[in-house]
Image (cartoon, rainbow, N blue to C red; front, side):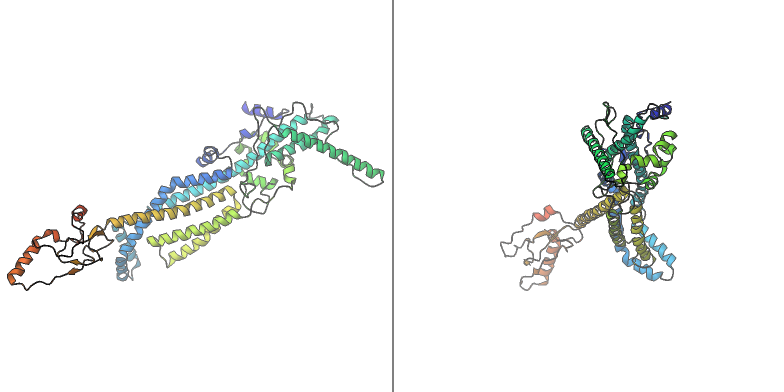
Length: 520
């Protein structure tokens, strides 16, 4: 019944809008971009915001990958001497060498899969987003046209409304040309600027200008005939005495304004087409339009009734609706300047260089041999592949790749700095409070050694012991001195242990006196 009502309304003088009935894609990415992020009206900036937030969501996985790569790097550096021994030991048996290396890495906690997991997730997101964004571009291209078709038919049917379409009177036929002219004018305004209530005054003035042009053309024609010159009779655009109907409106009920249809972004005229300077991409001709809507060429895919789809989506009707836009020369017909594809290539190369450097440091790839050759091949193939994507498909996907690569580089540098800071603090915790200083000389037996932290310092580093001249001692005196030193635990330095700071800080650190300590 709903389909029958739609067909009936379509055949009436003022048809119902068909755009709301066009089937929208419904996957997760489609809903996020078309619905959830609808608060960003401009589709270009919507993709930018969406990409940055998506990157923030998956950034913990990226950080985990960098952390694991850094851990693998340290394990590789620590095991380097052992690996070199294994390489010499199994120089003639590569299979056994590989097995021993894997056993050693596994024993030391080297992780192969954990650092690859975020990369796999990134590839899944990339592929699914690529497919989804192509579907979004096809849907939006078709929806933009149907919205202009709806407005054209709405305006057209208010001006040209024959009582019997099969037997059109002469007076009714005169209005057909002006109905088409006004419909194209309104569509042109709708595409580039949008429509509001104030535009009706501009439209009335435009009709008066056409009338004045008709009068001038008729006068020029009569003057040429009177002078005996050959002249072609001009076509009357505005019938004599024509005025817009009293109940003429530009917008349907409950609609106060129509936003501009053109989805531009910065230098790009049509974001649903590639950022290229060639072809009919800024304003699609019929053949390019058919390629751009892909599955929506089929009525069942668009979920429109077959009769409605056939009437709206055919070459004659398309050229009629888009007539003025297609013939316009006042607006740029260049859709882009290859800026996004170039940025995609440059950022891809930069990301690969950084990733290769990090993987080499982590010991995940070899700098020589087949792995090095594969890396060089990928550094050429990957940018070329992404450039093809950027040139052949909608600009929204190229924009996603640019923003994603830029944020990836930013996070890589940020995560690298954070990991280095973590390593530095962990490294510092491995060194305790050291006693001793290279500043000054401490006399033997003094309790005034400077207490401070020295990175990697020997607990006794910097203490220069100066033995004072002592009178010649007997064997008994020497034995007593030795026993006294053994009992003095406060003077004992335990190597490899971390002293209690409170105990150390309780010592007298003043250097006001150079007198030797009193004998106990």
